[in-house]
Amino acid sequence: MKKNIRAEFNPDSTDLVNFIIRHFTKFVIAGLAAAVLSAIISLLIKPLYESTVTLYPSSNITEARTLLGESTSKAALFGDEEATEKLIQVINSEQVMEYLKERYDLDSHYNVRPGERYPNTVIAGKMERYIHCSKTSFGSVEIRVRDRDRELACAMANDMASRADSIFNDLQRNSASVMLDEISRSYEAQDRLVRQYEDTLISLEGAAALKTYSTLETENDYLGLIRGRYLEALALSQQTLPYTLIVDRAVVAEKKVYPRRSIMVMVSTASALILMALILFVAEGVKLHPADDRR
Image: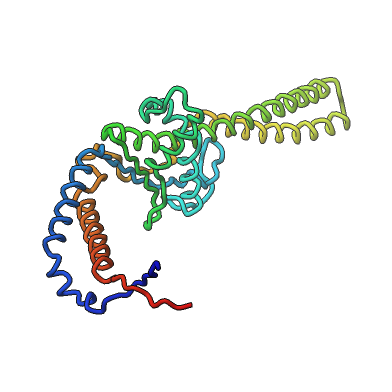
């Protein structure tokens, strides 16, 4: 008749000190093997280098501009929390990512296969993994770029900061250009109206002339107001303002940030020893006994 078996834990196996002494040689061999193997693997992994740019948003991001680009607000020199959030949003924008993809040929650099079904998704995943922009505890913005090419990582980080400044200026100039076109049309219409009143005034006399002259003065004042707005829009459409204040530019990294060989070796060795202890504990503590036949 086939016998059933049952498992029991031997209380003696809980003596940790004796347990380690009995299997000390096995632990040493397992630890050395794990350390050597993890060290070899870490040497095969291509290292990553990191470059960092630290910058603040300029007050130009939040303050309004008036005639000839003069400031109207009392915003702080380094902007505020709202400006910081806007700067982070611009740096993380698709415009910056597309600029980096084209400038550094990231399709080729990230080894995206020509027949890849979703190449943009693959590149986006790589960029999300290696490129980070975040707010620091000091209220500044930090751009961190990791890459296997240390010089490329440095160049990309600095270019991201520069590109953010260019985008803000492009947005300002585009907005001012639209406003300039609208004001220009209003100015031309108002100028024609003033000329009509001037022509009418020449042929008038007496009370009619005085009334027309009064209206002409009012329309001339309005024409001067439109001209001021026109000059303001013209200035804003042509000028370049600093929207970022760079505290630390990126430099070429001297040491790799990944993999950390010492940490990798220690974690692998500790994991191997724990696994070995678990296996030996189970192997030694569990004994198989015939179970009583019960029906």
